[in-house]
Image (cartoon, rainbow, N blue to C red):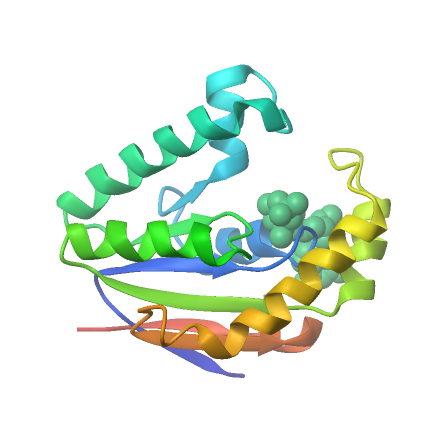
Length: 171
Ligand code: GTP
Ligand code: MG
């Protein structure tokens, strides 16, 4: 069992391709209101959690929610793919603007596992090509995360490591 140590007040940024298990991990490892999901925000602004045309409004809402929570001194988890440097840069800035430490947790499940899971999902219709491209993007970015400003970087490799990981909050 591996322990992931994070400061009690952190902005936890989950990073992983679609199907890597971010939402499942967030539900198991964090409290019911701690994770803010981009898909949930898409649903709130458009009525459809998969509506890609609602992305800009969904992220406006996500940033607003996360900012309010951080101002209240509440640990917050961002459940979005965060595979691009641009997406992560915005969240590092958001954490800094609220005097909170950003922590990265990478769910590196293996591309074929994610592709197979997504094929079995009714709420996802991404082609395997898209998922494979994103997996390649992610592999490139893992070693740069510290330089991007994340105070701590935790990379979980494979299904078992992801399932076994537990979160420890340091005061
Ligand atoms: P997106 O929201 O599309 O970015 O995906 P996600 O990273 O949030 O993945 P999610 O947690 O929704 O998991 C995708 C699928 O894999 C779901 O059907 C889950 O039930 C399944 N899944 C996630 N984690 C595990 C796991 O540890 N074991 C098994 N067997 N299935 C898992
Ligand atoms: Mg999800």
